[in-house]
Image (cartoon, rainbow, N blue to C red; front, top):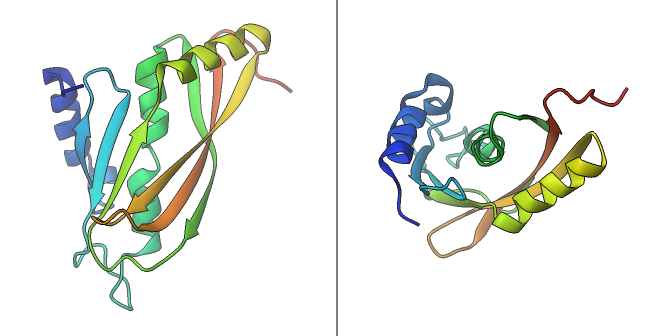
Length: 156
């Protein structure tokens, strides 16, 4: 799906937001329905570590907020959505620009709504890979996202 004017403006805003801009990454695409987001993380003076590869903190920070924001947009204002946990596995040094593609299928949002009809909150796990232009994985990030309906009491 192509970008809409709304998502294009959001992408520009995202890239100028100081907290995300500081990662060195850039959002390159947001689907009009928020079901896909793409980012790129170049090796530059801002992202380079002591040994000349992409700093692991930049890799993580580049992907950190994306799934949470996608779910906020997809599920709407009736839900509380938070990052709960994350794990990053470094597979090889980033010596060139890295890319990540985030996708949330309609079946996933349907499954979330169905799960929340049965219990007050759910944790969903998403994985995204940072890859080079050839598709070689340099790092894998696993995100745990907490979701509940507004007004429902969080579990004690």
